[in-house]
Image 1: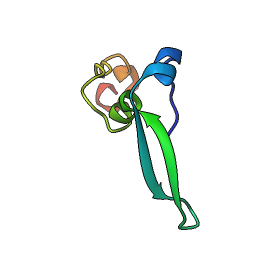
Image 2 (image 1 turned 180 degrees about the vertical axis):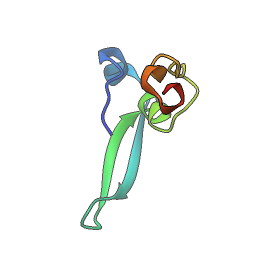
Image 3 (image 1 turned 135 degrees about the horizontal axis):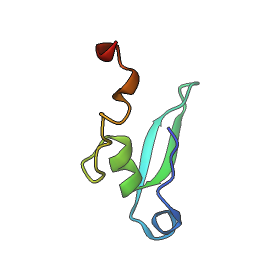
Image 4 (image 1 turned 30 degrees about the vertical axis):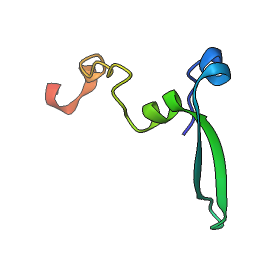
Length: 62
């Protein structure tokens, strides 16, 4: 999962080290910001996108 939260967050944001297996089963460490992790987990620190904006071509309107 990749997305950018800005230069200031990458430089000065609180960092967290995640550990997890790669595709070969080896344990890898990844340093991410706390803000990035919250967004990746679907945290409430970011406002949800308006679902009605992309509803123009939904099956319910056909």
